[in-house]
Image (cartoon, rainbow, N blue to C red):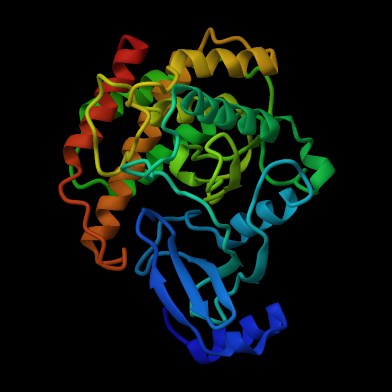
Length: 336
């Protein structure tokens, strides 16, 4: 972070607390796209989000988009962190950024905290709250919260395939024929859209802050940079992709605990979502395959940014095998 002489007074003004004029900042581990910092002072703790350094892919890392949707959802039953300060033009840090309240709770990555979600009932309940929060998000009328112009639902999935394919072309270091084939099959087999809604875009357990005492309650849903209006089944497919089961390999970029005994299966979660929303699951393998396609390209982008030194020193190792694994898994789902 840079320019504390600008950010400090802005924080003091936004919070009404002069103790924010002087602060310290440190990178919060786990951010693979936008960078997340905890900033602390005598007044407490806040969280700042900003893009990585270096050249950015077009349309990526949109700070205004993240802050806008969080502000819009503050009045709904979707739990979000209040946004306190937004700098879309980069006047404070030299890049766009925003600051939000720090929500206390657990962010689950490689391991469960001690004495947290220890029983099968709690683990099933955690899975259920993941589904139920997604159902709540997808039930919101965008116009009712001022997000009627937040995206273009028509042709959403086809446009997403083109967009992510373009991101691949800009960040790849070598050809991966399996990924090219997967993109082509996804384009050929586009399903009919059952409904449209606000979509999160990267819905997974480690983008949630879980209540410190209650694993069946989400205190805040984070990382809204890919949110838009579109096909909510893409969110369900993404959640199922990240919900790893016992027979799957583990990877640094897919931290998980859901492969442990007691957590519900992907099928169980999908059926709960369908029962609550009335959608059919006839095309769920398509949406899971799309999640593999999208994540493979996200992984390649992370790899490219890390290699360029734009990830605040984070090093994720050789990610080429994970890109290939996701492409092959997507093809298997489409029987391609």
